[in-house]
Length: 126
Image 1 (cartoon, rainbow, N blue to C red):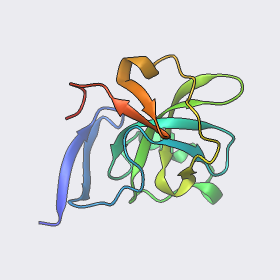
Image 2 (tube, rainbow, N blue to C red):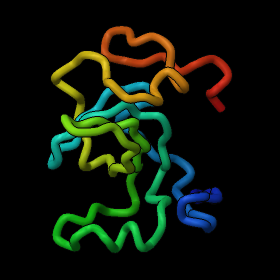
Image 3 (cartoon, one colour):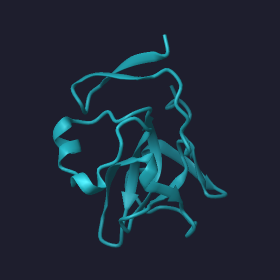
């Protein structure tokens, strides 16, 4: 029994995942994308890829990340806009820039920004 299952609303199906998976980042961490110029705050983590097949296939094959790794939901920002991003662990790194992220949904999920990390609002953890 080294596998577990969970339902993913984004994928619209049950996802099979390892019972234990090590996530490099935690909810509230500020991270940066390795290839694209954006940063964001982690607000949820999937133990493996749990989005739609169309979304996965839309990524060019030469840069398509592996499915069997953590994927992070981010409140993301770049110089032009704020949005929600879904990014593989291999494509994220710690944000060396530091400082808070300017996303309109931050206050709905997080409280204070302390030492490079956002504190999740009480009652939102599961």
